[in-house]
Structures are given as structure tokens and as C-alpha cells.
Length: 199
Image 1 (cartoon, helix red, strand yellow):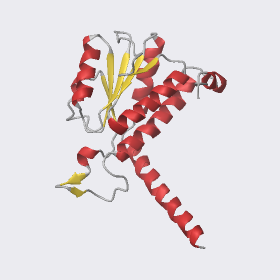
Image 2 (cartoon, helix red, strand yellow):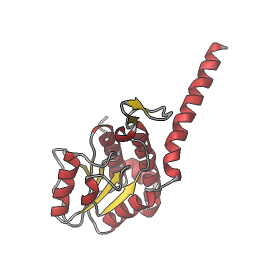
Image 3 (tube, one colour):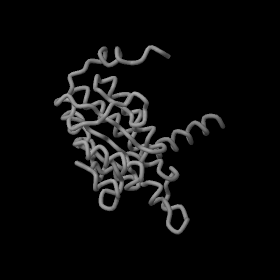
Image 4 (tube, helix red, strand yellow):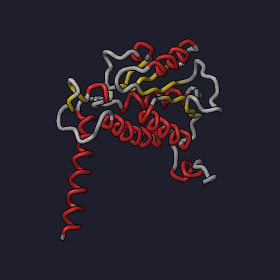
């Protein structure tokens, strides 16, 4: 009986967390902007570059993996085999709290080389990274920049610091990939064939 009660409480907790992430997409939808930018880059034969710091960066790497599975030329900034960026290309960055010095610097280099820059952020009005953006995708989620007031945890969030934003990125990118499968005309077999076999 106790085990059943524990499973129920875990299910309730999981539902609350998923509902919190789901609420991010009720006010804004960064989905179409992201799909449009990626598909436009693919149609002109451009390369895709992704970058983010911390846990945001992990979500960006997960996106990069799936973009490669879709047959796109996708690269994580900082990898030793990342090619140079040029005017046909797209840099996708995440700056949840609005900006990071590293993100800003990388965006500046991309723009100087003529590339488009898609900035994903929870702070589209005030972030330092936005000034480098060709286009901004607003992910309206709580980040570490706004999860506390005077050192006290804000609201009834179940997820600490920037976890709502990072969870929202994961969900967003799954939706982006789902849409791109159709836009790019990819079959499940084609996508699977591009998965690494060196595991």
C-alpha cells in the first residue's frame, strides 16, 4: 500500500512539473520562428551552429544531435571540428536570462561574418544578446535571473533556478524536430540511419 502511495505521489509531482513547463507555451510560441529559421537555412544549403552555456548548453547540444540526424550540417560551437561560419549560415544561441558575455561575443563574430543569429531567451526586451539577433524567439519561462526576490525563492516553482527554462527548451526542440521531419521530408529510416553506431 505504501509503495502504491509513493508511486501516486511521484506521478503527481511529475504531472506538476510537466504542467509548469507546459504553461510556458500558453503565452508565446517560439516554435514557428525556430522551424522557419532552420528550414530557410537548409533550403539555401547553409550550416547550423548552436551555442549555450551550462544546462542551456546541454539542451542546445541535444538539438544539434537531432539536426544532424535530420541530415543537416549542424555543429556545436567549441567542438574541435566546427567549421567557420559564413553568410549562408545560422547561429542558434540560448541566453535564458537575456545575455552572457560568451554568447554575446560568439553572436558578434557570427554577425560580422554575415550569418543570421537566432536568439532564444526569456528576456527579449532587456537582454544583451538580443542586440545581435536577426530574429528572437521568446521562451517565456522562469530563469535563474528571475527566480528569487531579495534572495527568497519566488512563487511556488517546483524547479530551481533556470530549470523551467531549460525544460522548456527540451520540449521546444522536440517539437521543432517533429515539425522539421515533415518540412524536410525525412523518413524515420533515414533519420535512424544517421545515428552513430560507435556506441
